[in-house]
Length: 172
Image (cartoon, rainbow, N blue to C red; front, side, top):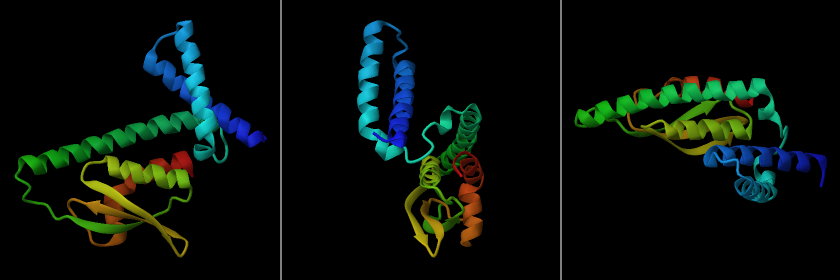
C-alpha cells in the first residue's frame, strides 16, 4: 500500500470512528470493538473514493475551525431560505416564478464544487441539477423557485454568494 493510500485509509478510519463514538456515545469494549471493525471496513472500502490528496486536512485545527464556521454560515442560509419558502407557502404561492438558471462559480476543486452544489440544494427553493465545465469555467445549473434575476452573475450572487465564499475558504 502506498503512503497516500495508507494515509487516506487512516484518516477515513479516524473520521468513521469519531462518528461511531458520537452516534453510540458508548465506551464499552464491545461497542468500541464493533466501531473499530465497522470503521476499518468502511475506510478500506471507501477511502479511495473520498480522499484524493492531503488526507489529514481536517485534522488540522485551523481547517476544522473553518469547516465549523462554514457550517454556521450554511445554517443561517438554510434558515433564511426556510423562512422565505414558508412565507410563499402561507401566502398562497402567488409570487412564484420558477426557472432554471446557469450560474458561474469560481470553485476549482472537485470537493469544493460538490460541497457548494449540495449546499445550494440544501437551501429550500433551489436544486442544483448539474455541474458543467465549459472553456475552463465551471457552471451550476440550478432550478430556482423564484427567479428574480436573469443575469447569470446577479443570479449567482443571490443564490450562492455567502456559501461560495465559505466553501472557498474550506476547500480552495
